[in-house]
Length: 192
Ligand code: AMP
Image 1 (cartoon, rainbow, N blue to C red):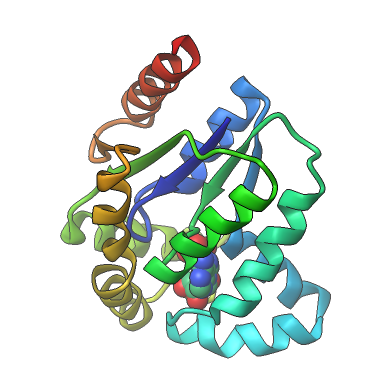
Image 2: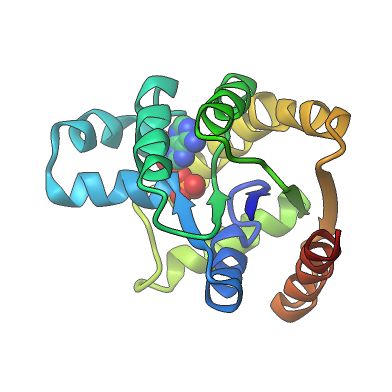
């Protein structure tokens, strides 16, 4: 099973992905986590990505797509859950090609809908809780990340709507309610 969790920064994609990983034995592919690991390792790729991420802009499609291809080619899981990828139409189209090459199929794209003002207060809280805080969790960078989301990432919605893969979920409720809705859609797919 291959699922995309899609939504603005702070929508809860990571939290929801972790829940699904445990329950359905899927592998989480978070491009943000992969980039942060590269920064921690001090790799050349990490060096390139750090300043872009600190500004809240998008890392190049080339870097992102080669990371994703490498992970998928390992075929070390029954299924994958993408979190934070694709971030623009080019990445969405390239993902289709990669999946086609590897004879894999995308099952579902879940949009977690959260209003901007709710996101801003969530990220401000995350920034205050030092353990979870990230270097890109501050008001100015968040504004930038939200702009990028509205200008680039949301463009993938019509693409997946046309393919009849997109479902929307209200992300402004409890973690359990949101995960319950996502699982309802997954079960529909499993039954098909
Ligand atoms: P995230 O952890 O998903 O919020 O991502 C943190 C940052 O990593 C983003 O603000 C981007 O700078 C970068 N990033 C993560 N995923 C992607 C992607 N698919 N395409 C481009 N940049 C990305």
